[in-house]
Image 1 (cartoon, rainbow, N blue to C red):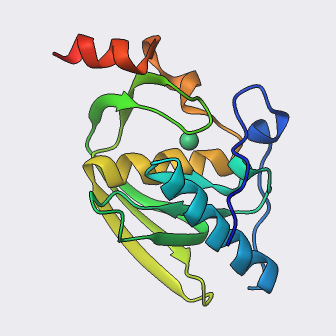
Image 2 (spheres, rainbow, N blue to C red; image 1 turned 135 degrees about the horizontal axis):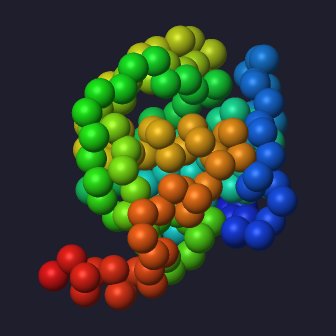
Image 3 (spheres, helix red, strand yellow; image 1 turned 180 degrees about the vertical axis):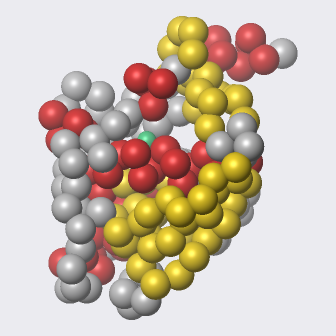
Amino acid sequence: MALRNIRTIGDDVLTKKSKPVNEMTDKIRTLIDDMLETMYEAQGVGLAAPQVGILKRVVVIDVSPEGDSPIIMINPRIIETDGEQKGGEGCLSVPGKIGTVTRPQYVKAEAYDENMELFEIEGTDLLARALVHEIEHLEGMLYVDKVEGRLCDADEFEQEEE
Ligand code: NI
């Protein structure tokens, strides 16, 4: 495993659409391992392949407080959403910033796992937010375009919440 360089806003690769993964290869397995290591090292809750410069439809997420529940998603797709949540959102590609974004409160998605077996996942709260955020990366979208009001410095945003 190796850490990969996280691309930041302004890098063209973040605005491009990613291509589906057709088969599991050693290269994709290494990409997944590296993405997990990179996400944990950066203390993020999700990372999409374009954020490490690879335009493939691969996402990793871990919203557990312990960081011991990785979710690996190949070719993920949202199949159902419900409700609404409004809250602070950040992105490893937009370091030090947080903005308010409205997202569905409930999300059901499907994806292939690292064995290319189809699975479904349901999430609420942070997991629902992460699912939508990460899958949008695969379309070349960044949350900053959906921020309501101002994109804040992370420490400044915390003060507003107090
Ligand atoms: Ni992001």
